[in-house]
Length: 555
Image (tube, rainbow, N blue to C red):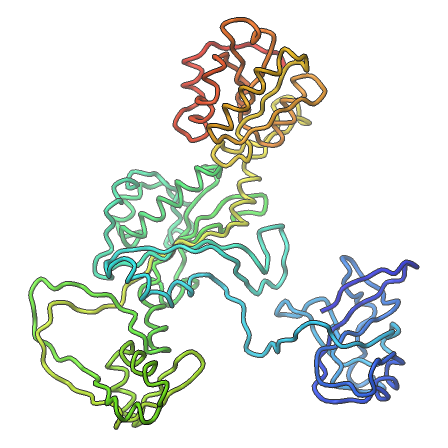
């Protein structure tokens, strides 16, 4: 709405945008604001007011000492001119009131905005990415050959009406969200891979425990599902996978719990919902949500559009049931819609026959929506038949299990949980990023810049590049201990040092672990393979220490 600019002479300017709803002459604006108007007539549109000498508070916000005059005190009322009155209102957005030139600050210029304007009435930003997946359900089902279960994932920006953004990445209005929509049969929510996570012991904070004031409890996922604390296997499976993912990327397991939504906070359509919460300096913070959304979303989209958002289930035995068929009368439809007849016929096929029948019975017609256009299908244009048929499949609306990840919050927790201080030296900090997420996996440090070391540095660097291991060569000045400390602060998990023993045969180097600061000596030609295995989690540092001799280095 407004931004602060500084002229060379140091005077603050404020740009304030407003919408002019009808025509007003430049003389009228001149009379109110003493402003410079480029044209004689000012048309409807978005305009910028440039205010000189406006006093600003912290962060460039308008100072509350210069608010708009009260409605009753304004000497000149111009309802077309809307200017921010306070920093934010109750809904988190700037408040607007009428202003006149006596409110403080000289209006230097009013000019038409140079960008395309969009009216904000009934325009919304998405609060989640999930709905894009739901509206494409039919295509996704077709891609999976009409079989359930299947899942689709999406990552992108989402927006919330955060009244008071603060706490860094934790409370923001725009953030990155990653969501998985797992579609399954509502009558069968078992999961074939649940056995792989059923023995995980996870800290669970049930709704009953919250109501009774009891602490969270460490439980195996298998026991939680058996006792119906967690509603079904598929939900339990995704809770287990969320736990494994968070641990893998660096969340401290001792500061991680899953809290169940209580009845007064759970969505009305959800069967069960759990949040992965991480303990931070700001308290417990929700980072991932995992909910059984039942069939609510697909059902609502189907009601709104008439589209068939259903899957098929094979029956163990064929049965006789009454079905509704809608048969278009093509000649009448072609006469009414002419060139658009093909589009209309294709869309009628996609609509649930029961919806068409119900609409025609109640209103005598069915309004077919195609993009932004509506086609009125009258009772004469279609024939609705009810007949008994032998069916081998039945249609049903799938349920959805949804894990939803807040990327910004997870990133913040990773950084906070992995920030450490060396024992006995508070000034020496380091970042304990797991190798799998560390941007650089290894740093190559020659003990000296002597030419004899360079061939080994180039060989090791090339071997790491061939193994697709991100690394850097550190030839900066300072002792090797200081260089270790610099790489530790950046979160680099491993360091390879080329020293004077490397020049001797057999050629070897030292490999240092960031967290323990312990080193081993190993052959030059094995370095890249070992770091590759360590970075992928196929090899642990304890296994490396058991295989190679220790190297004692005073830092």
